[in-house]
Structure formats: structure tokens, C-alpha cells
Length: 448
Image 1 (cartoon, rainbow, N blue to C red):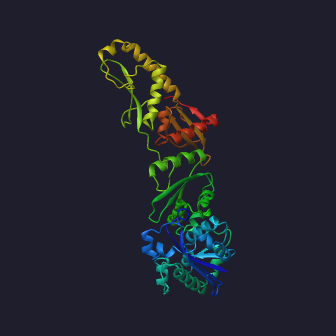
Image 2: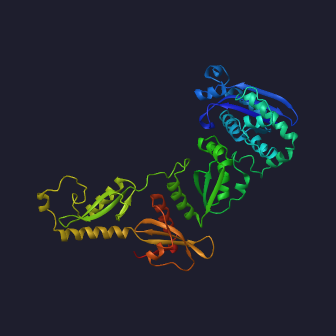
Image 3: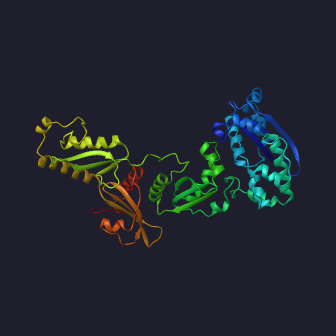
């Protein structure tokens, strides 16, 4: 038996919105044998634009049952049936979420009439409910109302059955088929082509724009997990609605995937990546000699053409480091701009001579250098002829790439010619340091 369902809602994702109307048509493959329809009080305000689309307003649902009041009936209708809807993942996510909140579990097989329509009636300009009905001369009564759209879906479903859809349905309902959980606009061949290897994957929308970047030890398994969970969270619902293609970059190992993902998020700034969107490094620790001959240290905004002793994401981070250096090596707070009151002639009387003071500055800088090592991580590549190499220069990630097996340059300048530079950030740096600590044999110290 098929349960052909349509719902109207207050918004686009189940976890933050409610159902305002639901219609269910139980179909035996030949005809409708039972129907159910009800307005639903969503326990929240219906937005004006939803009312404009559906005609359902707050007054209409004020005395309607809440979903928990009809949950038992809905569960009895849907349990052990094949859940059918036009863009099934949308309707299913709402109904499953509302049933769960009411104490019922829904684990039905799903059948999407959009995906089925593409197989039975290929080549049509659009498979939205309205356009598909127009193409097949199906009249919709009460468009954007649950029973009107549900009955239109029933007619479409019957037309598909008449055109030999059962063969496709049988394949789509198999446990091994991805048709039940794939996003509406994503071809299952895309999932089938993904490798079971480490890497970074990219979700594209219909226009080809990258909207999400992720990493994985097993790309195919991780990508599939985005869609099989079918929960009502806003981000996942946007994936289901918007993902139209997936590309990937294979990586040599998990660290490679971690670093590349972080770098790509910073480069592409995808809409649905919410973590790792910290600002780029904005400050640096610089040294210069003033007109009195004193070497001075200062934290300033990052300069493109001026070499910094170290970089910081936040000004506070740099000031903390500089204060520690000043206290440890007895540097003058005013000469380090930690005390920003003007330097007077009286202050100069208490300062060390430039030669002696500069010696303390140089010791502080040398100590910082020792804390900021230069090294390479060399690990297995994608094949036996190459090695993955990541370069850290003076404590900061410089870049990465592949080098020939057995030929690791000891000279940092020669190595740089073989690698691609990347922007450094705290996440990448910490990931590489943790890997180096856990795998000391893969760390090669280099001379600057």
C-alpha cells in the first residue's frame, strides 16, 4: 500500500517550523482506498508570505487540532506503508519530526514522485508539481492546499504506473538504492562515483556554486551520511533542497584532508559551513630600529611586504606574547609599545645604551625563533612514486604538495619550489603540530 502525503507548513525546515495542514491518500496501486485530511494548529504564528501562498491563516488553524492530537491516527495510516510525496524528503522530515515529538517512530520506505517522474517521463522542462501537472494535462484543484496537491500527486502517480513505473519503483525501494534518501536534484551516479578514500568533498547547487566543503576518511560513506539521517535541522534540509552535484579532491591521509578542508573553507567561504570561519590572521610582531638606534618590537596589522616575526589572529594574542617577552628579557615597555605614554628625555636617562639593550632584544628574538621551528612533515602520497609534504616555516604553515619518493630537499628554498603555498591558520597549525608529536619519524627539521 502507498500512503500519498502532502503537507503545508510554516517554513522550510522541520526542527523550527510546524505543519498547518496534512492530507493522506492510502492507495493500493489501483485506486484510493482511504483518505485523511486536517488543518493543524502549528503552535506558532503563520508568516504572511505562507498565508499568501497557501491561503491558510492564523484564524483558520486557531481551533484546529494540534499535531499531537492526531498523531496516533497519522501513525496508524503511515505505519508499514510506502510514504509517497512530491519531493518526499521534505514532507517525510516534517511528519517524522512531529510524530517523534508526539511519541511515535516513523521508519517507512520512501518514494519520490519527482525522481520517479524523471524516469517515467524523461525530458520534460520541469518536474515541480505545478509544471509536471501542466505537462501531463492534470488539473490541480486547490493548489498549495494539502488535499488538492495530494490528489494531484495521486493522479500523477497513477499515470506513472500506467506508463510502466512499477519496474522503477521496485528498484527505488530496494535497501541498496539511494533513491529514497538522495537530494531531489542529485543523480545517484554522482554518489556511485565517489571513492571510499580520504579526501575533501564539495557540495554544489544547481548553478554550480560551492555551498559546503567537508572532509572525510571515507568520502562516499561520509557524503551519504549527510542525506540518510533525514533529520529536521535547517542546514540538512537546505542540503536536501539545494545540493545538485558533488565533486571531490582525493587526499593522501586524514591530516591532508583536515588541512585542505580548512584552507578551502577560508578560500571559498561556503554558505553552509559554519565552523572554521574565523577571520584571517590580521596582526604581526614586527621589529625595526628607531632614530636613536634602539631595536623596537611592535604589534601591528599584517603587512603584505614586511616580514613578521610571528602572526596572530587576534591583537590580544600578540600583546600577551609580547608582554611575556618583555618581562622575561627585561625589555622596556615603552620601547615595545606596551606602555603607550610618550617617551620623554627623563625616560631616556634610565634606558640601557642602545648596544646593550639591542643585545637583550636579539636574545628575545632568538628565543622566539627556537619556539617557532621550521620543519616538514613527509608521509605516504596517493601512489608509491610520490610523498605528501607539508612545510612549517618558523612556526607557521607555509604550504603543501607532493614530492618524489626518496627525494626530500634539506634546503627550505628548494622545497618551496615544489610545494603550493597556503594561508596559515590556528586550526591547520595545531593539526600539524599534533600529527608531528604523534609521528616523530615523519617530521624532518630544516634550516632556514
